[in-house]
Amino acid sequence: MREYANSIKQMSNIPLDVHLMVKDVKEFIDDYIGLEPNTITFHIETTSSKEETMDIINYLKENNIKAGLAIKPSTKIEEVYEFLPYIHMCLVMTVEPGLGGQKLIPETLEKVKTLKEYIDKNNIDIDIEVDGGINAETIEDAKKSGANIFVIGTAIVNAENIEEAAQNFKK
Image 1 (spheres, rainbow, N blue to C red):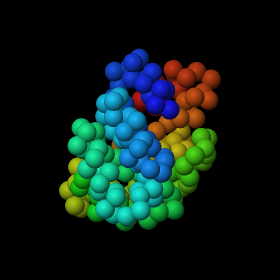
Image 2: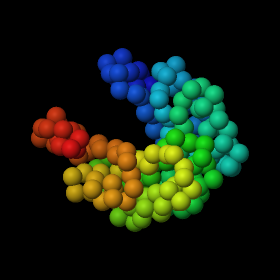
Image 3: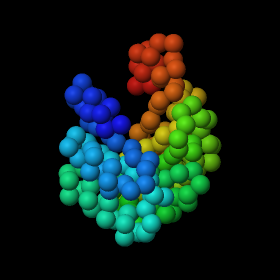
Image 4: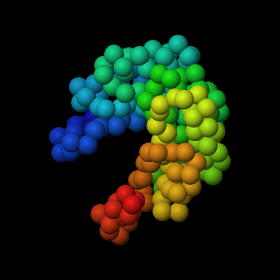
């Protein structure tokens, strides 16, 4: 995957955003540091303690990389609250990670709403990203829930006209 990311980095000036769905997060971060990614997001479920989570967040910052923290559909949103002041983005997975083309799990948008309310109440400056099942039918609900970054994969890749589909989402 690093080679793929390296190819993208060479072809584009768009900031590189790496989403790691792996164990041993720190080892994988080391693989990507040389690419100077803008953001690396890792899953809270892959760390064994709060201290390890903070160590990874601090390690990213020490390497001038913005830290993102991802959460799976089955994990309570409250588990990320204490880390929000230290990260740049919280990614709420709206499907179970792993397979493209899944349908958005509607309950995950309630998590996004709860997260957004907590962020606003506590005056925390952070982006909320959603990933999984985002398409023309679900993006507006995700936006209304509080998300401001949307990962759109299958809805673009499987479109008859990829460029047109991408342009439509920009609107």
